[in-house]
Image (cartoon, one colour):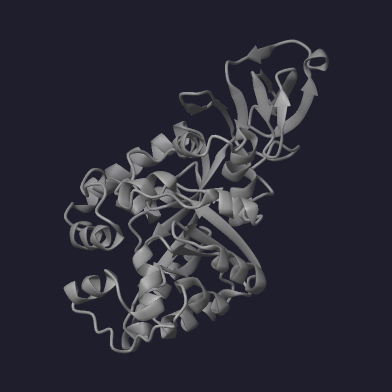
Length: 381
């Protein structure tokens, strides 16, 4: 016999709509949504909880494998210097310490109400953790290589990582890291990969990225020089970075991450040229690295489908979608909570292609049930 759990909060968010406190959520003991009814039709054994009932959050951008780097890089360095530190310091702890850090970070995500994660991977470090996890993961196998002559080798390496994830049955796709770290040759190889969706990319996280593409100036030139990279093959396009790479992927769903320096012309170009685009915001990481936030009012005014992410513990103090929401509300108090909650739930599930189970309270789904108030979010199922 199916055991029922009935919850009544101060409000109920369905994934798309905020309902009044008179509505009761009914789920099975396995967490499957059975119904939402008025309290007068709910019968006995309704649990009164103090907070908003909400489907599990969807974290559409995370770097679980960098969890061991918490507190290693100071705030406010700017992106090129931050990336230099990540590349130089990420291997300084042993694999056991990295595994422990990932386990602790994942436990915190689960307890705070995150149900599914779009996770960036540069190798197989997180593979064992994910095989045993209660969280849903889509692993984005990240490929990078700015020098064209190395494109095939870089692609084959990342393709090998992808195959290791695929053999376990875990959802995954191979994706470009960022416009400043992927050559045109490598972009072309990645775009031609069959059965590879969705695609995620770090987009316009720094002003230096647009400068690089406009006229080949800015801090990324120092970054390349520091690592001895040959930049002679790169030719600026005279545009922002986004129009230069997006046409390769116009046939695929795209998750554009950060978008801190995205402009109105970029949004229009995307609207005119892309099949389906999701704009993932990681505001706490943007403040940590660049002390700057995306133009969220601009994204909203252009009807962009927004999702939320946490980035990594190398660039954030916690992996909490609720804290990302609180940061947005602090800086943009005019945005309705109902709208931001949809970014964190249904929109994120759409971006990862998992709306059959996650993102909303609809009959038959198993999205997780969380309780949120002005201080914290916590899982109750």
